[in-house]
Length: 129
Image (cartoon, rainbow, N blue to C red; front, side, top):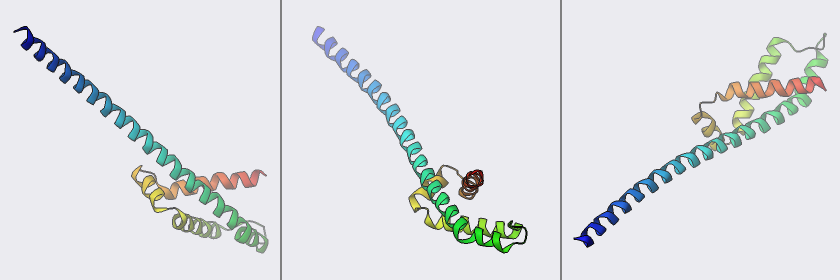
């Protein structure tokens, strides 16, 4: 009888330990997946930022300066600014890798808005120089 009780008690303890271990591993897997997802979002954001900064710099050198020189007041018109914005968004979306774009979309990021925000920060930095 004593042997049976020990065997049943051992089995119950084993089952409880397995349950606790599975809960701990499930929590760790969820935490690591979330951490990995955040890492991927950060990398995708960095990629987009790098692309936008590069394009803004290129447009500044190749287009903006020429348009400003051609203008009587040395400023861009609203239509020119809108056209540059469309060019920026189009080029940035084409250069952004598919995995990065998919990651940002899955995270609920409005890529166009993010492009404009990054560009505005970059342009403000250029104007401050």
